[in-house]
Image: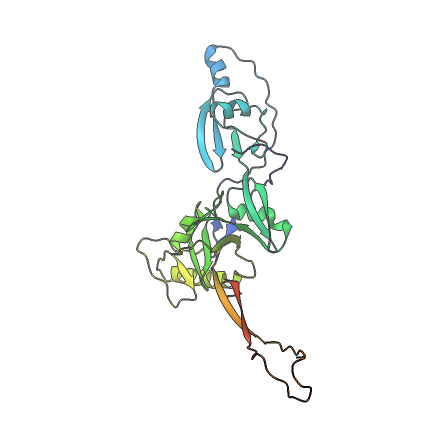
Length: 321
């Protein structure tokens, strides 16, 4: 868990199932629930067996998407979390509230705060979210602007994010002038590996909405190709937009759903460029008292043009300076 601060994490409402290309409903994992308070009626009971039945209960605990069924005697949400070793801070969210009473079949959902770097119209800043993945986080950040991206941290040849990419469906990977569609996952580095993308230390990686104007065309082409190959009865591990064909993979699941997010890789190169320019020499005339005034001028020393060398550090992103 993270240290408390005055920042308040954004919360995210549940998302309705989305249609797939074949018309079926897209199944989503457990999102942040809308919890309605319920008043429990007091019951008069007798006997040790009945008393135990009221105290001992089975509840569902969901901590950042890790769902488990817990048999507990805890009477409140706070008691349950303490018994399970779940420690919260001010940036985390829990539903229902910590003082809510537990009953048989209760659902308790915990979402921990995660700090991410967000780029909005090219300007970067850090913020906290309680989303499970970038798909959910981008939904919550959409109000900040039309061009919103989540920037991955870089270390050597690896890219990392504190939250998953999209575990509900396929992910588009935009790189080197092509778009691949691969199965989603929790780890951005794993998604890049599935698309056979390697990074060097200068490359930039960010995650954006698959409908963003800079990536939408390539994502749509790749998704259509994936759907067509699936209808033809073939299976593919990934599909590349911009290539004539995609390699089949035995037993691999065809990517037929439209990706909701795109992982964008920007190739960055920095090199030194040397530019040399001519520096014209200057002429200075002076009077020599030892020469007669009617004599022609005399060149004491021939001038010579010089050279000025400047070294520029030029950075290109996907070939653009």
